[in-house]
Image 1 (cartoon, rainbow, N blue to C red):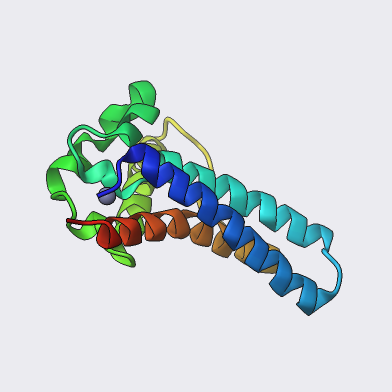
Image 2 (cartoon, rainbow, N blue to C red):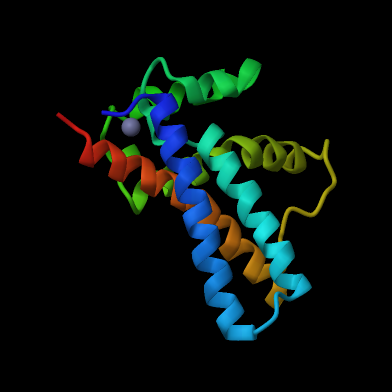
Length: 160
Ligand SMILES: [Zn+2]
């Protein structure tokens, strides 16, 4: 199976292939590249890079490069590593990224909810999305999912 560097190279190449497909598709659709599309492309790129370096399916390994990228916050993935066995659900095309998104949201939101409940924090945690907000959310989800998809496919293609 490919190592961390090989996965990075594959995901780097796939990013530009995705970008080319998106640009060709939207260019045909709109004839021009709109400012909104440029913002969504930036968000897609940021999500893709974040997912590639911080949300790899290999977070299910006790020792992995992705956990190192989290620096002193690498410890937050220790429970994830102990719950999900290597090449299990974390490497599922549909559920793998979902487990890491939900896990990360829980890690971030749970302390905020607790602090709000006991009255230390007074912030509004609810999110209201308009039509552009939905586009941003979908773009972020696609940007997170794609590197994980390419990782899992590379693992399957080059395995044994
Ligand atoms: Zn893997």
